[in-house]
Amino acid sequence: MRVLQFGDSVLPVGAFSFSNGLESAIQSGVVRDVETLGQFVRTATAQASTSDGISLLTAFRAAQSADEATIDRADHASFHRKLNEEQRTMSVRMGRKLAEMSDRTIGPSSATDWLDRIRAGRVPGTYPVGQGLVFQALGLGEVDAFAAQQYGLASMMINASLRLMKIHYLDAQRLLFEVNARAEDDYHRIKALTLDDMAAFAPMFDVLCSVHVHSHVRLFMS
Image 1 (cartoon, helix red, strand yellow):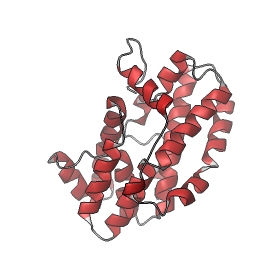
Image 2: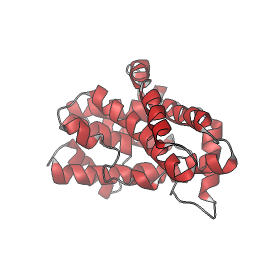
Image 3: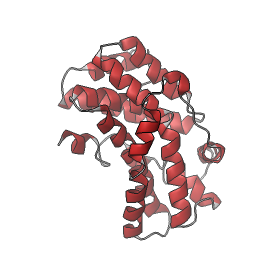
Image 4: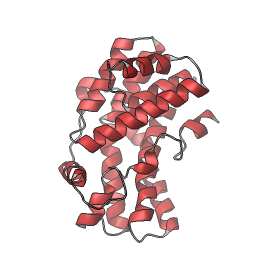
């Protein structure tokens, strides 16, 4: 039940406000149908697994040993791997909201201490680190935390597509099902990696996210 609640795509952390670059991709014609939408979402989740996914697992494991220094290193690493303003804004807004919700619903935990450091300006407060801390505080596994991250990203983008392009809602769910099928392989691919191994290479994705900053007409904040 905790996985269902904290992995829910409608968790009140603001995900509905962001498209993760999809709006610019559709406006520019990079995404124009179900096939290209699938390619774009799969690129985003693959990129997330080797960057945010590693910081999430690092934070989760550090929380188990109350290692605040490593949690903070994971937070800064996640923040600085994002090349454009909107991606950083999305991550820290959602991260702070998650920490605040955790403090209110779960009670004192490593996420509460992390929230204090966010408020003090000592750490940025990125969403994947928040997910790692919250899932550890709930007594859940790191696989659950990673799955929630990957599902949340894919779900955010596919839900956004329903407002941005002509796509049947059943095709959207089929696509989400297909993307989610890769999460287990992604976890096994990155589970032994460290913060020094974090990497993401998707130039078109980064360019589209940057273009969105200066768009005059837009539905989403990213």
